[in-house]
Length: 441
Ligand SMILES: [Zn+2]
Image (cartoon, rainbow, N blue to C red; front, side):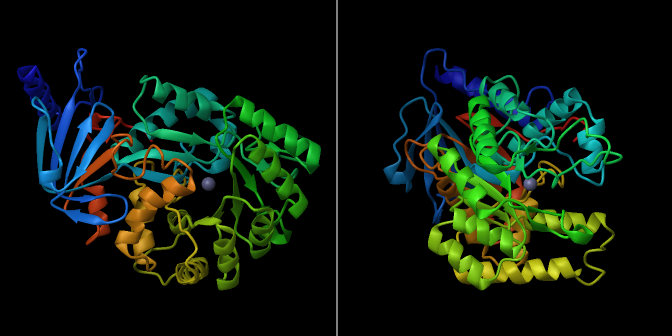
């Protein structure tokens, strides 16, 4: 058995040296036997604190033990992996992704929804899923397929069955929008767009029916747009009434699903807070007062800094040369207010607006906008796990949780960009090496 394990380890190293796009996963071959890995990095980030000199014991797909070397006892036959110069962390959790979208500077959102076939969109999503996993993000909360129906449920199942590599997925299926507010718009008002970017539902009955339908199809969360750029002069303006949002929270809550709200405007945020949603996405116009209310009600903020940063650059902003555009200045101010308020802050960048696998961009933005690197690491692990109600499975390095781990070179608590220096990723005890990537996005 031991020899066999050594052979596997050798194969692992070979696949690291000679990465192959078709063969990125090295699965522990149990052969009826248990597999143990003893991992010895320089330090372990346990989801809360950086622990110098700690070790981790993995048993099949679970974390068995973690702590100082004397406290972690590996059984005979365990595969010891020395990880000098590295930090071992829980697999990261992306709080706001769209695996069915790709960057808008490649193709506008409208053209993706209207001109790309469902087959193309799903093919792209499989590539996005792999890139996400290889970047160290072992879980994503995917907040809407944007015209691709319930295909996120199918993608999630394919990953769970081991058909393709990818992260664990918390899926929203179709976002829910107020009639008339969302895109894509038809060529004239005489026509109906053949594809809807989201599900339209208004009033108590229609909202309840839509939410129950989505739950039945496999939605883990319900995503609702509390505002959108449908105001005069395309300004963001509220959509649903407080009563409608409360109905949504009630209907989703009956099925054990949280409601996740897109809200940029102050009024959209106010209504979402009154309705008692779980998280507010974006929150651009948030103020000290708004964030204090969120904190009081236990509503987390997912600020999506990287999406704004990307969109401004697509619109011509030369970052580092040009001064900050107004929207970036405002976003920095609101994020500063959020930090000061003590509201729970998730890590979620709205990735899909920018390149999948570049998820670390949000973590870097959070640091650039004033958050401490250690707090950003907490957001991307234990905080997201708590807020998304998955802390019984992932988000910390703790006995009994899934062996979803990330090994990076250096110390990301000192320099957050180290989170990009992925040595390998483990998901449910299986090691994935960032190798050659196939073309595509
Ligand atoms: Zn989004």
